[in-house]
Image 1: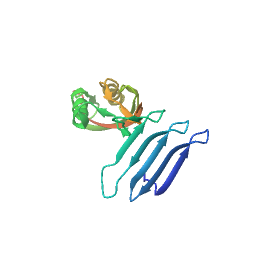
Image 2: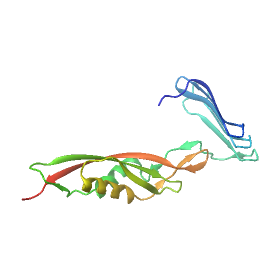
Image 3: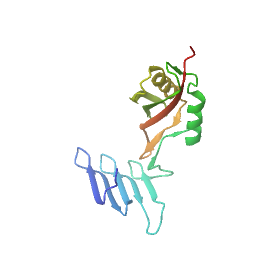
Image 4: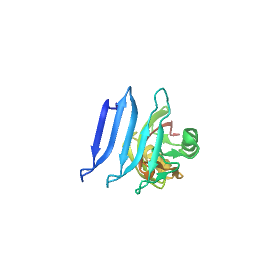
Length: 174
């Protein structure tokens, strides 16, 4: 998905501005986000010649909020390496197939990390064609420990993830 170019304004149903942004050179130069009552909630800006933006957040009375988080992705505790390690450790390694040689089976699971960091609603996005493989991938995702939840505008939000799995199925012994 490409970032917009120029100004972008979004409105609440009540007619108040929800977001006002300006994008230049594939970067947000400034973003304002408002409460439904019209009060400023967050201001982000990118100073000239800087790579890191500045975020200022406010409560509904207009008082500045310390350590305001504009947005933060959900993260498995320990990061991507820990997530890969969890999958490797917990995925079944003894699945078999009725064939003369080993078979590679790929399945894709989609899931949600809810506002509290729990994995919910895992489902198969693309089946491997093998029920045992699909069920195992679903089990691994469903049994995942809690994640660090995603945050947007200083509030916990749901995060959507897609995880591919690859299994090597060994031939059944005859």
